[in-house]
Length: 123
Image 1: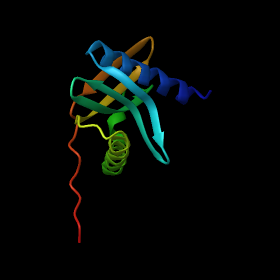
Image 2: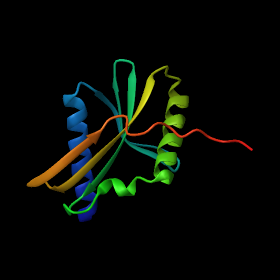
Image 3: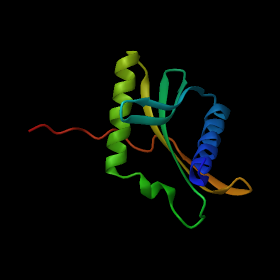
């Protein structure tokens, strides 16, 4: 497995551990439907969390720079597809995790409710 893939898996596991520590049950990791993908789907009480994890080995890079409008729209479409398939009445939250470093020395930033789904405009 390529080094960046291993780093990404490690970062996702850190995010899973944080969510579990916060009382969430992990429903899915790397959930896919067609081209749509969510890194982590977790649930606690009446809330479902759709989480994106960005991991960078370099401490001076901001992993969250990779979460742009397009990535957010992709996450929202994936969440809509997931919820439609499950027909669940849960509240939805979008979280972001930014991890810098390596297993020996890292920082983890968890941003709950990082964004609200953008409203669509119709013409």
